[in-house]
Structure formats: structure tokens, C-alpha cells
Picture (tube, rainbow, N blue to C red):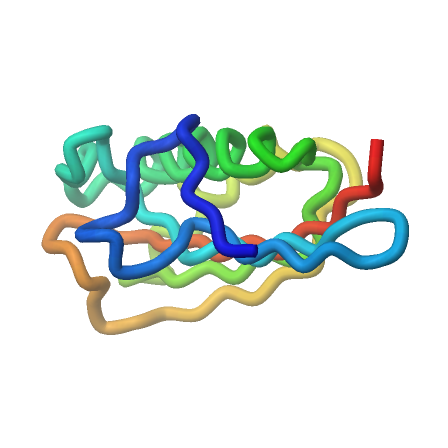
Length: 132
């Protein structure tokens, strides 16, 4: 099932779904599309500020997860795209707050740019949630 929950703004031009959900025995696998820090109108939040963008991204991710009965404790893997690895510390500080215990598996990649000017960070999430 592909979904764009009401808890977050719709993706740009309905070109993709925020999450693909695969129901499996006893739960579901959630594959979240890459999220960038945009407001409800699609404008980049705090252009160039990795800390503020990370906070907004995890706010969006939290809304998508919650719409499917999941939370940050259900996250299995985080894939991160940064435009400048020198800014990793700002992102890492926010991540430690979101995942205070044992962090999920992770991949971090430096890229030339992201699709929206001013966006310096994009985060993809994979989560598994048990039926409740």
C-alpha cells in the first residue's frame, strides 16, 4: 500500500508516496521516501542550516511513522544524504536525541546537491511495526 498520511504535507506534485507499507504476518514493513526539510507549503526550512533541517525532517518522519502505528523505536535503518560531510556533527546531535538508546543501522552519503536549492540533508527511513 502506498500512502500520503494527512499528518504531513503532500509530496511535491503527488509525484511519489511518503511511505510504502508491506503488511506481513504480525506486522508491516515501512519504507519511507527520502524527506527534506520543507514547510507545509513545500518551501525549504532554514536553507543551509543542517541542524534546523534535521529537526524538521525528523518531525515529518515522526508524523509518517505515527500514521502507521510506528515510532522511532521501530526504525531499522536510516539512510542519510548530506551535501557537506563537514556538517555531520549538527545532524548527529539531532539524531542522538531522536534515537537516544541503541541507534538503528545507518548509511551516510555525501552528495553534490539535493533537488531543492537550500536543502542540505535528505533522510530515508525503513521501519518495522508489529500489529497492535
